[in-house]
Amino acid sequence: MKIERDFYNRDALTVAEEVLGKTLVHITEEGITKGKIVEVEAYVGPKDRASHAYNNLYSERTKIQYGEGGYVYVYLIYGMHICMNIVVNKISMPEVLLLRALEPLEGIELMKKRRKTDKVKLLCNGPGKLCQAMGIGKDNYGEDLCGDFLYLENGVLVQKEQILKSKRINIDYAGEAKDYLWRFTIKDSSYVSK
DNA sequence: GTGAAGATTAACT
DNA sequence: GTTAATCTTCACA
Image (tube, rainbow, N blue to C red; front, side, top):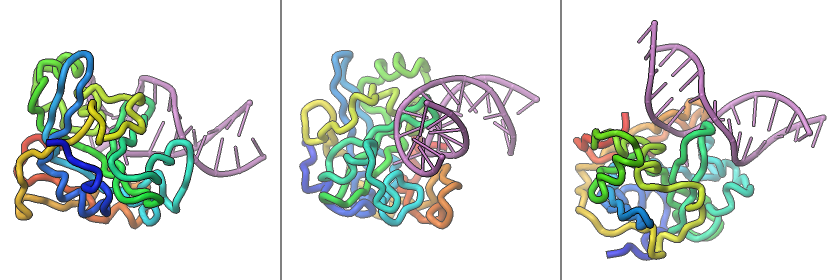
């Protein structure tokens, strides 16, 4: 079942815990790919120096974060990799969840072709990798997750005890914000990023 | 108009 | 553990 708007219109830390175990679905001309979300990070714009919307910075790139939850925020990093985020919370609240890792469920052959590797565990264990495997690019910026081509559906239920909180990765430039425990992973999953 | 830096990855030593 | 690849975005002039 597709997840509805209400799920996304809440604060980032709450949605981050509940989104673990859900299934990301992308329907393209090449085929369908699905993956279970096993790792996310929360970015809360106004008070998070690691966020692109820190201090309520409003720009061409961040404007989608100020809308309703349930939309896709995509950006290019280091000139070569795409990262996919889910916009959450209500209008004028710039909060997003960065998808960092998936467990491949369907369309694995297609993922292998896109990623040019045969090792299933390396298909989606990083933010840039999962976008490549799922066929997500800059064209998906602003896509509605309540639409018909890219959305989340209910997956397995994850117990609270299975959720691990830790420091976010690769944001040493962010000062005090780098110590926030805003990275959420499913304990013992072998598909999380390194 | 110009320049610096980055929510990463893969391939090195 | 270290580094190159590579280009958009933002800040400033």
